[in-house]
Amino acid sequence: MSDLKNKKTEPTKTSVLRQLATLQNMSLDQLREKWLDLYGTEPPQYKKQFLVKRLAHRIQELFYGGLSEQAKSHLKKVAETDPVATVIRKIPEERKSQEAILPGTRFVRIWNDQRYEVIARESGFEYDGRIFRSLSAIAREITGTRWNGKIFFGLKNSHRKKEGGPNA
Image (cartoon, rainbow, N blue to C red):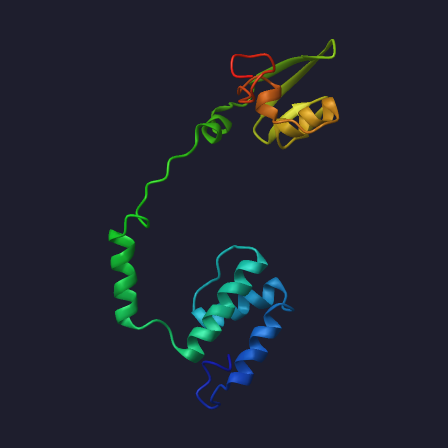
């Protein structure tokens, strides 16, 4: 049983600091066991660093005490009424377009007099028999330089001013 929940030994600041220091060196299985001990529930399936941070918070919460009921009530009220906390965020159009690319969609680009074809798949984008995570990675493979993949394949316009244009 954890030092913090064991009634026989009173935790000290030193024991809390020692527990915090050992979290970084624990395996994922050890962290999950510690989670079960401190929270009394099965741990979520998150990465090690998330568990370390949450367990560090829990250890300190048990030793120093959590938020007062008054503080919890105040934070809840702020979260419900504060205009900054209640802003409804819209997904930017460029992020929506990523979701709108359906598997099977073909992209064709002529670059330096050569035709390049890419097919959208469930797991990414297929080019030259290989799967890439993004169109940008394929554009870099083709050109040897960094490109925004959506601009390279014509899904999005570049917002750069053209030389000799009306605003030049």
